[in-house]
Length: 359
Ligand code: 8ID
Ligand code: ZN
Image (tube, rainbow, N blue to C red; front, side, top):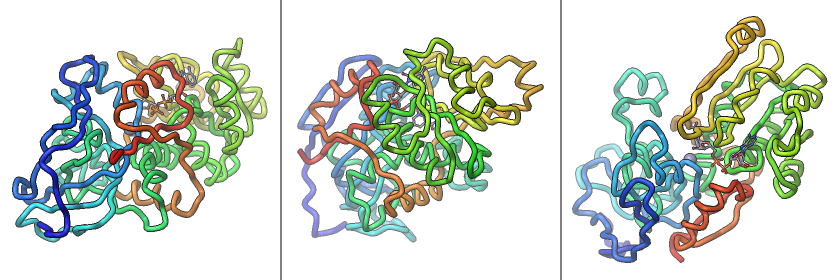
């Protein structure tokens, strides 16, 4: 416990009280006090938080796995550690450190998945803004072993969305089996995950065909380095257009970050023989259907990719800190979270929204 930080008793927070209920904005939500923290826990005073489409899924309760209720969403937070639970041993972070809160808030670090670096799939995990309260409040409780140190030369608002969107697409690209010079198809390219995927992909030397809709998203995708653009609303034949855009042979890999099942429908068809489909976007009530004959005869790999581990987070941030990847975001306040969800639902958010948590 530090004498340096004044910790208030109450704070602003956006609360989901019941599945699909409107957000309740309050300014008197209790702040967990330093004396109430368990060993291994820390209290972070948030500066900002990105808003991910996952937060909207959590509010709506449209995934097969339920969120805690009542719930404070949010998992792209950056702030300062203002307290650490008494009797915490060997903490890798200290008071005053600037850290990130990502989706994976806690894992046991001892099960087979954790030992193998697949901690995001730890059966005992806790996820920020889903199974433990997240970053849409001014203070959040997290775990010293899982918060992510933010590189000094990366501004907090720039870092926020790297903690989910950035890490997720960085890892998906890493496992996409795409090599320098290969074509990568990115359905959802104009959204939060997608616009960062364009930049990580071009940094890896990949050639990007961006798939999304509307002039604003087209411009952003092209500015960020996409060589080809297919508008999924305008195209009469998406498979044909993507194959034509990729030297007539199809993309070597696809990282699907669209939040709709439709974006998966043709992926196997526009992949080149030997191609890889990275399953990232998590549309509600959707299942993946791929023609078995062509999956086999085209030697297609289909891989699920779930956020990233602590090492992926550090790598994704380090790349951003070197200026290779830059989040395109608009600043808003917590009071504007409801309209942000509405914008996400309508597919109108270009890049990301990052909330100023002290405003
Ligand atoms: O670990 C994971 N796998 C992970 C991590 C983080 C987020 C998965 N996600 C999931 C989210 O839960 C969500 O389902 O990825 C999805 C995308 O998250 P996001 O990038 O935060 O959402 P967004 O900003 O709304 O972007 C989605 C984009 O998809 C486009 C939209 O226009 C938007 O720009 N899109 C849609 I909707 N349908 C499309 C289609 N058929 C499409 N783009 C191409 N083709
Ligand atoms: Zn997310």
